[in-house]
Image (cartoon, rainbow, N blue to C red; front, side):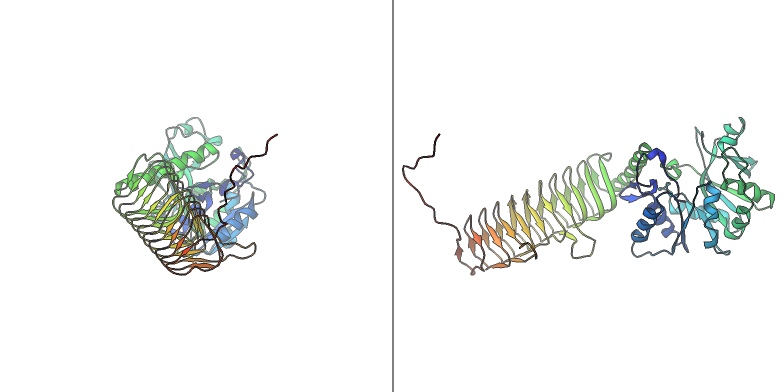
Length: 459
């Protein structure tokens, strides 16, 4: 169910498209359905339907395609009315799991247990005990048997003392659900079709109603405000941090880590404070990440050191735009690696150096204030401070090739396409527009001129 407006979010963006840990709320829910190997996912949309449907149409996790269908709930007349819209899409032999698009952290294992409790012929409810159950539907039992769910606004004073509440998640045979939905009415305090009313229909029909009770409130926590979104973000990040440390990663402060994708770490990885990891990031054995780094879609090999304030932004993993940092490389501080940057072993990229769509071979160094774009750089090259590859002519990108053991002096401009021959040296301040021969000193700058007794203009 993803039709709600989310008024308390105070945002033009549909509530389910707000992000937690780098993914939209509704994408979390769809990904959980993927883990369940669901036959299909039916998205009930309403407010912001066009945006929600477009987002999910293009962002379903690669490698695990789902049969996704969209139905509209217009107007929104309650949870029962929302599920009614999905009825034409539900096969009679299926099990229906009802989820909410703004409840992102329910585990797939929990839903598997809920399905097992249903057994294919029972109505199974996911429940939890809350110290403060205000606003939630109460689970009314007769001993261990569930008799009803009573919404808070319709509950008696005695029923409001019940701590066990309905989470909004259920598993139910489709053939039974369809019949019960047809019996719903709006005779309640909110004048809506309550999905929870199907419990009394199940009881009346002699269908067992079971409750699978859990104890982790984060699994059933919904997002209705920016405050709740931030709380869930912190809960998620804490869980990720605890797992990383359990696996041996040294975090300077687990409260100051953000993983907005997948982070895999080998042994003896150390991560300083305020680092953000997005997409797919892998860190090899002994990698050290300095404070305040942002790393997106990158593979960093063993022994590499990423100094503070470095920004690494790779393209899709496995593509030509992926970023790779080789064994023992040193990057930063204040360095930037853009899509397609590939650094070999022992490469040094220093402060305020930017690398884009370039391959740097073993032992190459660019230590200060430089730019390498669309370049192939051989081994043991020294690339001087202030030097750049001029790779763009206003219409097309061109490549620069720097062969092994070249020394490029400071403040040079290499106008692509151009090749610097192996072992050559380019004098500082040169603008190179033609290929340079191997082993030669190439200087391309105006001759220095000194004018004695020259005086500056004065007023």
